[in-house]
Length: 417
Ligand code: ZN
Ligand code: ZN
Image (tube, rainbow, N blue to C red; front, side, top):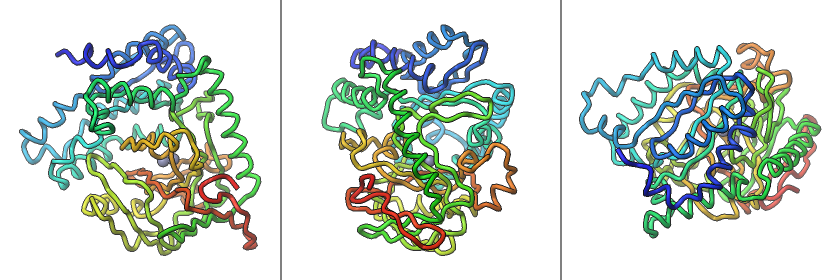
């Protein structure tokens, strides 16, 4: 199969190699002798090769890549027996969990067409996703508990590029998307590694200010939104680089513009409207409106994709509660690009957001040493899902609310106050 040469022409190989280098040196901070597990779409082969090159140059022990292919994914929906949709490759995920337990670093390349499954039966898509989440859980926990250094970067797959730029021929669409990915990932700058050092320092300053404030809650107000998000007891804000339990300081998401923490699973009240569509497993969910009572979503509507949203909320008990709240200024470079990427990694960095489902244990003071029960007692949510959706815009204000009720402006019209 020949998937590489045509689209590779539209992607600047020099910047692509810089992206590979940034993924290894900034994203993973891969250590000498450390093994690396990569998952990637077939089309991202040129980027996998650069990452592999820089990983071995950094002293990687062994680099192993698993590829996925959009066409093969669709064949399952066309041809597979009905029972197939309750299956997942448990053995593979068990192997991944074992690798992470042994200290292997994890790199995921995103880039598949986010609408790939949009024509498929939503019930089947949900069943397959549920089976996959359940099988993946032991491995995912190593990531969500931040046991190891991990990183996600993106490659401009032609199918994704055509979704983002539908009116352009494929080569132009890929060129435009690659340019946007390179800019957001700071590899269009002369010294990308130094640019990331600066950026990490800025994000750490914001997170430090929020930690000093010790807010009990955040209050979001804007069109269709009046939401009080209680924060977990002894929550901690993070942003940019952070240190995994294996002691390695890495940048899990490239790009990243957010500072984020853990809401209290039982203390969210009011209603909120999404400000950008959410692309979830092949379906676009638009104009989400939900109402919370006691931290739980009790009403949810969407103008589009409502059925998928309902199924998502029914995944498990924790799927109706929040696991993350994040601040991103409206003027962030990704927001300023005006592009809807249909990809959470980018779109969540264009706007303040909340996430349904699993919390990050690192977003607690001394989180590395807390048991699952302690995290729960402090308000941390647990679920098979973690789905971010955008609630910020230039029309949204945010106040921090202290324990005694005192209010401090945090954002006005989408910018840091
Ligand atoms: Zn986030
Ligand atoms: Zn998130």
